[in-house]
Every structure is written in structure tokens, then in C-alpha cells.
Length: 408
Ligand code: GCO
Ligand code: MG
Image 1 (cartoon, helix red, strand yellow):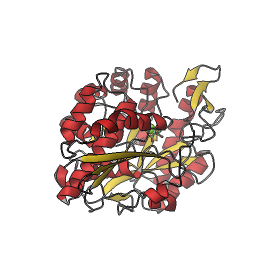
Image 2: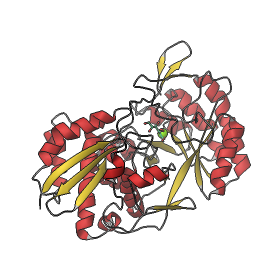
Image 3: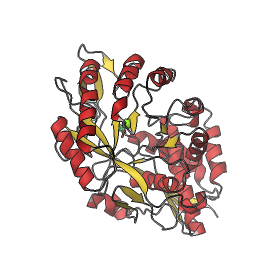
Image 4: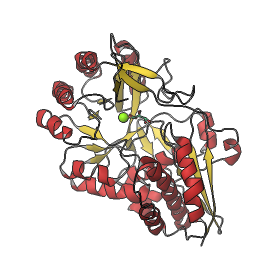
């Protein structure tokens, strides 16, 4: 069996999805996602210019050897662009494997450990009242876990995770007015004065059962993060995400010394080498790597297994940063992983998105039910794809009030 061709598509409804389709001499094809927010043409170029020419003629069933060939063969290892491009190939090869076996992927991993996988939705509000309405809406829809982000009084611009327009919680991340980023102003002091009380009010309003998550989005210094984590302890968050940039991994020790709040980290990591010490030292509770950005299923499974040895659960990144193909790969891992925790989930299901990526994966009452179709269980409509092309866009950057560049 041989790979005969591989095509890369860039574009989608309100999003530059980078989609890889690997074709074989037996008519079976596989699909993978290489979307990387704000740098989409880079993964597409890496795939087209370097990886696809090296794929043609290989046996698609040897996914491990193909992974090692690209990873070791690149010599300059890792990095988000390379790992996302390898991830697209790897997921497409697993898709082919599942189709050949006539089994959904979760069966190849070891079968189902649960029926529905718990997800969390994004609630957002310009202010706390707005946010409460947004949380109430998700609770009414049956969600059991909600991430909460709101505007901070006195903050000169919107904070991370707050939608520009009410009701639209999909496009607050990428701004499609060009590749020059919007600049937001951030003030850690205002945030630290306001947010712990706001979280306490949300807990008081929605009671003890709701799982409440909050994303600091890498914005605090280690000492500030320790103070914040200590202060929010009584709220009993499900997790506190990215309290500091995890470049300085010792910062996590300081936070741990001061608080028992569960910590979730890793959405910007792209290999096991960025999280193995955090996991082995049990400095985090949830690992957030997105499957496609860590080189696909082959590498993600190594992280999941290592995490399982250290009581670290999964909480895969699932913002609108990834296509339904990445979400599907994660859904199969979520169905199987003995140390599954939760899945981030944004309502991607617009009619346009469903038409581009038809599937039978299903959300019901805050639980994600994986499809039983062979492989990933998501298709890709090339006729629909022809309607879209690359739209230049960018993530914002954050500055302090005096102009100092900060962590977005
Ligand atoms: C999350 C993330 C995202 C990122 C985005 C950047 O927790 O979902 O923080 O919202 O900001 O993926 O590309
Ligand atoms: Mg995050």
C-alpha cells in the first residue's frame, strides 16, 4: 500500500483551517489538521514544500516510522510549526489506519472508558452581569463545566477571552483585519483586585455543582500567581489555567507551595520535552496540549501515558484554534484515556463548518459523544473548501499602560 498524493487546503468559515488530505493507491484517504492561529501559511508551506514530497510512495500503515522519519530527520527538532505539520500527517495516517481496520480510532487505542466525555464551554461577558447571563445560558443548555472570563472595571481595553460583541464567542481571538495585531492594554493590579471576588460571586450564584474554570492566559508574575491562586482557593475552581507563562517552570513550585487550586497548563507546548518535568514533579493537575500541535496522536499518547503515571489528567486545548479534525482526534483519545479529565469545547457547529467537515460526533448535555464511524469519523468536502481561501489575520498583543509589551 502506498501514499500517492497529499493536498493542503487553507481556509474555512471565519477561520484559516489548514487541512491535509493524504491519498493512497487503495482509494482510502486520511485527514489531518495543521491549523496554527496567526501563522497558518507556515504549516501549509512546511507541509507542501518539505513533508508531502517525502510522503509520496511510503506505506501509510507505518505511521510510527513516518513520525520518527520526520521528527529525527528534521535535525532541528520540535517547534510549533514543525510539530503541527507532523501532527496533521500523523492524524491523517491514523485516520487511514482506522478506515482500513473498519474501526473508530478509540477502538485501536483500547476501547471506550466512558460514554460521553465531559466538556467545558466558554462563558464571556463585558462585565460580571453579562458573564452571569452567559454562564446561565450554558447551564440551561446542560453544560456541567464552564470557563468564565469577564471585563475588569477600569481596564483600558477588553481582557483576554471577552467577546467583542454579545453572543459571539467564536471570533474573539483572531482579528481578520490584517496581519498587524491589535494592541490591548493589561493591568495585573486591577485584575488581581477584581477577579477573585468576581469568581466568588459566580460560585455563590451557581452553587457547588457547577465546574468553574478560569484562564489567566499567562499574564501574572510567579509571586502574583501564587497570591491569586491562594485567594481563589475557597471558590473551588475546577482549574486555574496558565497562571504564568510556563517558560519558567520553577514558577509552578511557588504557586504549589501557596495553593491547592488545580493547575492546567500546556496549550502552547509542542512536545513531551516541555511538560515531562512538570508532570513528573506533579506540579500540574491537567495537561492542555492540543493533539495536533504536539505531533499528532503518536506523540500525544506518550504524553497522556506519562501524565497518567503521575495523576495528571488531560484537558486538551480545543479553542477555535483547531479544526473539527483535531477535535475528533481528541474525542477518540478522550473516549479511551484512563486519565481523561475534561475537553475544551467551543460551539464550532455552524452550518458552514458542518458542511465543510461533516461528521456524526455529537454534543449532548455537556457531554461529547464520539462517532462510531471508522477512523476519525470526520469527512472533508472539497467542493465546500473551494469557497474559502486564506484571510490574513492576527492574535492581539498586550501591553502594560506604560507601553511595556506583555504576555498576550
Ligand atoms: C484557550 C486559549 C485560547 C488561545 C488561543 C490562541 O484556553 O482556549 O487560551 O483562547 O488564546 O488558542 O491561539
Ligand atoms: Mg488558555
